[in-house]
Amino acid sequence: MSAPRILVVDDEQIARENLEYILGKEGYEVVAVESGEQALEELEAGEFDLVLTDLRLHRVDGMQVLKRAKELSPDTEVIVITGYATVASAVAAMQQGAYHYLAKPYQNEEVRLLVRQALDKRGLRLEVRELKRQVAAQTGYPSLIGQNAKMVALKETIAQIAPADCNVLILGETGTGKELVARALHALSPRAGKRFLAVNCGAFSEELLASELFGHEKGAFTGAHSAKKGLLEVASGGTFFLDEVGDMPPAMQVKLLRVIQEKTLIRVGGVEEIPVDVRLVAASNKDLRQEVAQGRFRQDLYYRLNVVTLVVPPLAERRDDIPLLCQHFLTQVAARQGKRVEGFAPEVLEVLLHYEFPGNVRELENIIERAVTLATGPLIEVKHLPPDLQQRSLQMIRRQRREFLTLEENEKEYIAWILEQVQGNRTRAAEILGIDRVSLWRKLKRYGLA
Image (cartoon, rainbow, N blue to C red):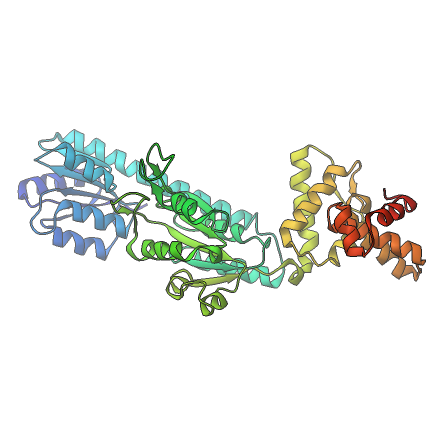
């Protein structure tokens, strides 16, 4: 393992050479420079594990060195040194991400201890990140189940772009797993150790969405009894997922665009610009290009979000993954419920393989959870499926056996199916069937459906 690299920045020759000497004796690789300009050049040229910089430097000061070091390598620790210690400057340094604030004169042993602690902190963070990467590599994509060619290509693209800190747009139908893709991007990125937060843009009014994203100051509106950080501010350093971004109101689109461009936000009712550092991953079940063409979505925001586009295929386009997904969900639900349900009757998988799944993977998961809940033996059977899928099973069996239904049998099945579609609402069912409620009630009684 190579020795940790330390950059020392001090315009006082004696102080600079002293630090270079005591750190060199500890076995560290030390680069010492006398100006902020030289420090910036060294930071651009290569990564350092630790920077010790004097605060008061000519032209480019220690705060600028600190800021640039963190921009280029967020994991680099920085210790700020000054002979003019004040509470304000100490607070400012810590807010910019400094590990510690050291006042002159200092003891050599104090420096040695601080340096060891800062390097230990960096090493631990890098170790945790590496372990996460190893787990991800060993387990693959535990949430992105699938061996279909489209899913394999999607997972390969995720692995390729995850380390890049670019914004990503995920497109796909409702229930395909767009948030799981976003979480996979986060888990395999350098931001994995930070927070992943999400918001559904279509679930809030414009005012509530602004408060959720940007936060608010005390007294900004009725009920704002205290200041509150927004989710973008809380997620700084991590990944922020904007689900159904196509439903975002136009005024909010303008505000989001400004955050992306300026990397700052202003809380509702506030005036102070707050720096934010998030990777934005947006998702939509709409064709955003069409939304742009029709003036419902800003073109400039679309291009800001759409640096890379990922398309999640609907379940109907990867039917060969259905058995794998079924077993995955069964194992999860059975373990959660403490039940010994181990597999599926062949006719169950036959029905599921021929179903359209308008709700995609989410619908399949709900079907399996229902079936496991109702199961009493080791296998999921057709009777554990929702009624409309049970009817499909009967129809498939009859077609295979070349059986024919009487008019009454057909009517009974159709009425049962309509009731399932309207969640048992008999008034609505009667309207669809074109009969009154009394006639429907008689038929239900006759067929044993009442």
